[in-house]
Length: 346
Ligand code: BGC
Ligand code: CA
Image (cartoon, rainbow, N blue to C red; front, side, top):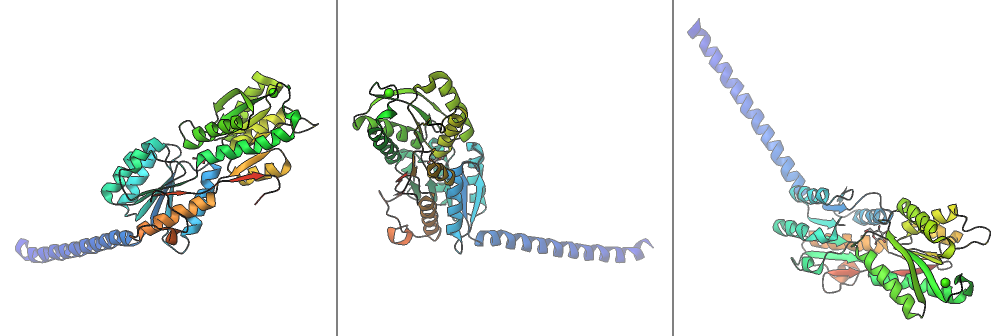
């Protein structure tokens, strides 16, 4: 019985074996086709520094809009963690990305991202947070799209200068000086440092004697700016004659605090100036709580970043003719700012 039973047993085993091998080859074929399928399907990876920043959110939308009908994008948000963003880059490379757009959490950490992409030969476009020049020099398939922060600072100042010279009562204590506060973005961000520096320089160049009562960061956030402005009011009271914020979100936070303190009614006014021209900022401009802002062109920046990434993904060198924006120093696109006051709303 043993021998007699062995033949069928071994033939059953070999049948099972054949089935097993067949199953294995089916699995490996499907794994292979999945792997090559994901490689063959082109995509552009996008990693933004966080998902709840109003201006960055606009940029993301424009990048996605621009990708319609072209190479699709896969977007990830790093929630302000550089380590998470570094993982995004690795994941994009492993998934076969044809190009990557990065809005870095920490612009001084861009060198490691560039190095990773250089080794994998995946071209890179930075947006809004400018890598240091030394890092940009690490590889030639690295581009930057942004706006000249100095110009935003100068526009913020110009809006105020016009107001100051038209409104002698703006010098509330009549001492011939401007007492003001600055609400700053993230320390180290080029838009924080340069917007603030050129704002003050331009005020001084126009002949305004400046007396900076206070300044601090609210990390680009509305809620933090409201708290900060409340603290400034508690310390300096009505001696503050103007509020400058590095972005609209923070200008709006300052306005929230000022409204709580009784401003913008009964003739009590405070000039507040922001930057970005986000929809909420434009609304505040229209209702008169925001004196002015500077259009930070999310549409232009988003479109330019995507078009550069697209050209690189197609193996071409981006040129003005193909991307629709001029390149400076071959690898930079600077999108201009526009001064916005009531009356010249877009
Ligand atoms: C914008 C800010 C934004 C920041 C993010 C700046 O250019 O003005 O509103 O929070 O970029 O990096
Ligand atoms: Ca004064």
